[in-house]
Length: 152
Image 1 (cartoon, rainbow, N blue to C red):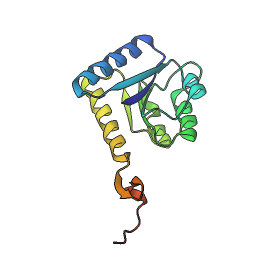
Image 2 (image 1 turned 180 degrees about the horizontal axis):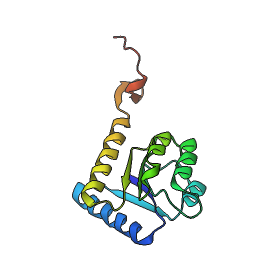
Image 3 (image 1 turned 90 degrees about the horizontal axis):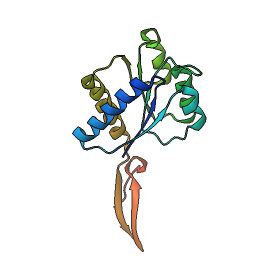
Image 4 (image 1 turned 90 degrees about the vertical axis):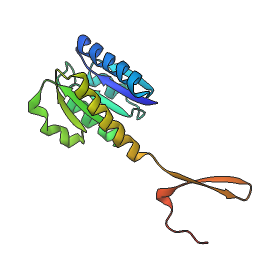
């Protein structure tokens, strides 16, 4: 399951992005869970590092998306952040928080799905690969990235 946080203060635009995600879920056969937030302050206050992707507006009433992303990065260096906003002047600042992309509103469904596909590609690269071996008393799962050498 892909866990997505949608941070958008405009209810109409949040609904549009939610409909894009529902359509994407049908087309891709991916299972998607979405939690919505209406302000950067809301997600920072309630943040637990259990999201895979954050879709974040920049311009919001109490805490802007850039400040929220900076706070989130202090707690979670792995989550994929995609800014979706009408504020092109902040695009360069997205690099400071290691954002995957910075998309200008209005975003088409096609452009949206390209960004989600790219985010999923990044997530899949991070997935750990394991080797399962038989040991005395059962089986053991080893993280391949932690194996330095094998003695036969």
